[in-house]
Amino acid sequence: MSKKLLTVLDPKGQPSGIFGKVLDLKNPMAILDPEKQPTSTLEAMIGQKMADRLDTLEGKTVYLVETGFAGAADFMKEVEGWFQRNMPSVKTVMRSKRGNMFTDDPELWQEIKEHGDAAIVGVGG
Image 1 (cartoon, rainbow, N blue to C red):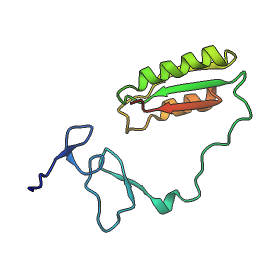
Image 2: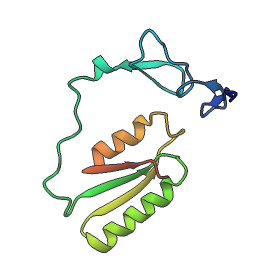
Image 3: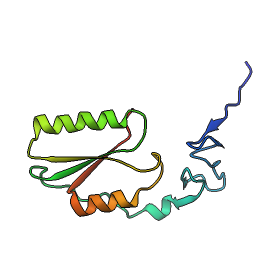
């Protein structure tokens, strides 16, 4: 049986390993972004945690963020419909993240911090 080597392309179409950069075999736990820049290590992330859970969503504003991944917008529309049917007191705000699914959107995160109580960030599928 012959083996076939496949080339993987990153979001910009460049040959890649994971998200635009071949893994550093000396540091396999490095976290890499699509812009080919190591952003952090697993050790640097220790101690970070998710936001505290809200007691209730009743009367709250929930941002529904689609990331640009195929199917994300449709998925978030379904989530919005669920809230309208099942929790009508929850205000939903649909937003699309700028850039591609792997890039940061500091302006959107700031808007959510200032005007939202929670966010659901979806990748779709």
